Image 1 (cartoon, rainbow, N blue to C red):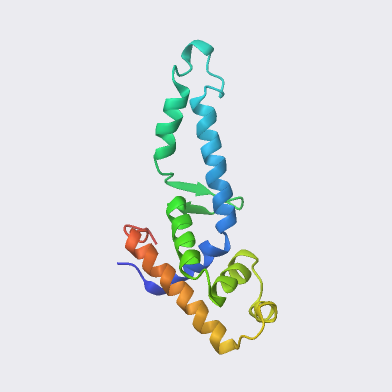
Image 2 (cartoon, rainbow, N blue to C red; image 1 turned 30 degrees about the vertical axis):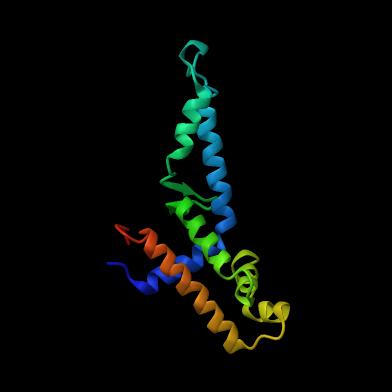
Length: 151
């Protein structure tokens, strides 16, 4: 059973590093492509006969995890990207979308975020931030991200 408080922390931490996760996924896919194109040092005779087909099949498989630059391991990174995208889509036309951008992507302080958005009280800010986090929590739980996690 997952601890909601820990899951909320994980959502905040993951959202604040979403660009790093996207980059790590991209690099992992590039590495997979190199391996499938036989660019990792295999003799030409041992390279795959249909690298395009093999690459397509491999790209359909989910990446189980990626390491970020500081050594942090993120499980199910593509699912986390989906959680982030679904959350952004849900809040697309509200001030909450600006909070997602300022707080998590740009990593701005609460005070700076309030200044940048303007016309937003602290109470409204925290209400919207809670809505963002709990919406993302629902998406993540619905996708089974927190199932069978080691703590």
